[in-house]
Image 1 (cartoon, protein in one colour):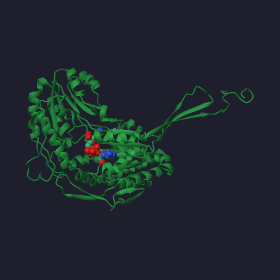
Image 2: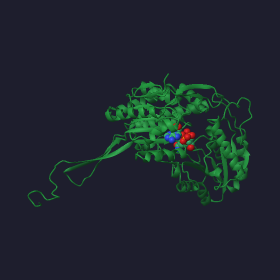
Image 3: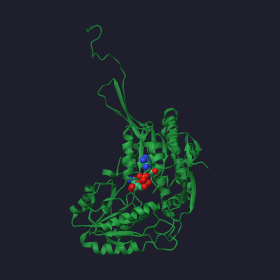
Image 4: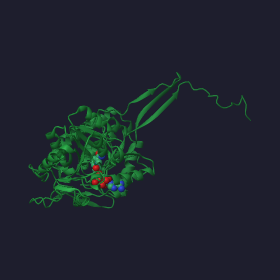
Length: 494
Ligand code: NAD
């Protein structure tokens, strides 16, 4: 079956290219999908442009758009088994994690279905003869580019608000994990999305993705992915001064004070960094711990990390899964090697597992690099793998200074039993999300995004919808009359 969806049709790539998808946990065959080139992406942009400029969708009442989003959420829930399985096969993540993701995807569509973008406000003109309104309108054609770690979830954070606000879009998921985006487009089609409103292109970033940043007919590019690619997208978008929203990487601090609930802090320090084998933008990959408790805490943490059971997506005993590719595992391994060369002490992991049955996958043991400090590359750079660096502090000021000593500013946590300190430190951290005595929860109602080089703009929440909205000021003089600013024929001039 063709897998590009352009102008309401499932089609093959113009040049006939295809790509084979294999499960990273065992290299089993998953699918052959079409590989778009720039020509296909431009065709998708043209279709989305026509649908926006001449179609009904942008002017469809919000209630009708919201009804469609609710139907999509219903269908996602009804297809949960198929979607979770497809997500796990593409990413290698444990089935239970994919199942959680599908629940969140449906929740995201319902949230934006309930958040009207058709409002506006009346402005006091100070003139009884004039009416002034600021109204919200859709931005136009949106280029949506997503990564491989949470393929459908990241797509839903963009597709749902884009549609709620009345835009048309071209979605380009990661070339490594296309399956659930294909299912999403099928669901949108079944739920009655008009032709051209939603389009899907699959393929490599440099070919299928680049036109979404460069093309003059794209009004907004919303990108989630790595910092280097994000800079490239932003630079390309500058040529046509399009709106840009970027959700990039993080190197996130997890600060543990000596007065924290030790059992909770320890358990969550493991989840913070090793969930999805560290392939989470908000992973708590920097443990910043008060010096007085560090030895015992880190010893316990290493003991627990050594016991984490790795396995494939459908192994009920597995607690963590594989990395996405051989190239990514090589990158993580090189990062660990470089950390050791810089003086970090390897406490556990630092290698692929020896377990029988895992040798065909790209697994990597949970790794702890001890005795780190913020001038080291392994602390500054995102590994995007199961690697924790350990730094220590004495006192609140030093904890804050160490945590903020990074180009990133996505998320992080504070563990303490002192509520006023928790609030004080939260206020001083330059992060888009701060958790206190918890790690990882997010809400569709609360904005998600980064300070500093972790991104531009926000997803989720009312501000997330705002990325997909343009504001227009409409001023009407209800009693038109000459302004008298310049001389009239009667009052002078040559
Ligand atoms: P990536 O930057 O390699 O790729 C992301 C997407 O961009 C893919 O679809 C890719 O094909 C596309 N792309 C690549 N080059 C392009 C170009 N020149 N023009 C247009 N598109 C291009 O990232 P990845 O490896 O897929 O994902 C991992 C990264 O994503 C990590 O850095 C992680 O922190 C980040 N991430 C951030 C968030 C967040 O919410 N801030 C969420 C998830 C992942």
